Length: 308
View (spheres, rainbow, N blue to C red):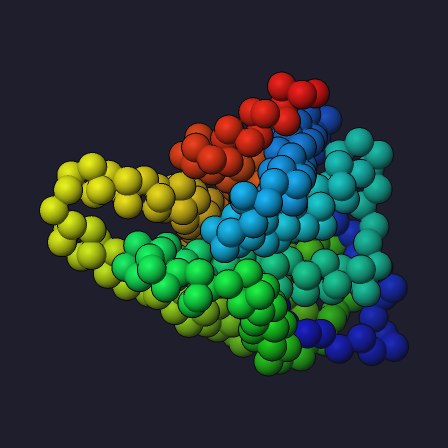
């Protein structure tokens, strides 16, 4: 995210158009938006509540899962309420400060989310390749520190960016203050902003994905050395949920990112819908994946649901 100068000639607010080209359908589009958002909140708060209440779940894997879910619901809470205000009440205005804060927050959360996925891969590597020292290498206090490092890394990366002045155009063709959508209304050269997008994907996210790939390569090598077929299955099952979450995250993030670079022939509303789906579907799908693939968590959640 680029930081922008706020000169005297700048207007005090921007206008978010929603989904251009589909204004007549805004009220219908709001239905899945609202439904996915509420389901995602309920699922994530249920998981956070269960992990918090159950001492048997106070383990690195579940603490990292809670951090991951906090980033996801934070991101969706930053954009969905405003999008619903646009769809339902035609409240399209957002202050410059509010827009830049939203943009900064979303990018910090995205980089933090990637770092937590990387840390979860390292956690699985230690659990499978060095199980006897697992509790020593990754105590809960160290997991908390790693989560803080992930957040600090994200903030530092976002701050190391260029500054751009705004022009008179205040209309942002989006439901939220997307980085490139805001950059396009800048008076300055946005080459740096485009390079930032590439830097974010290939340096930060690329590094995280490389660490994840190396971790799972070492995990597979360690698993193949285990003589028992049953032990093979048990070891790999502990990684299945994390792998599914990574695939979902990468798939949902890839399309809107690529359309910013290669946007010829792509209708703008297609990009905007996919960009919103990333923040809507991740919080809704990830608790389901972990609930299905992680028996201990599934049993605890079922216990609390039955009590209700």
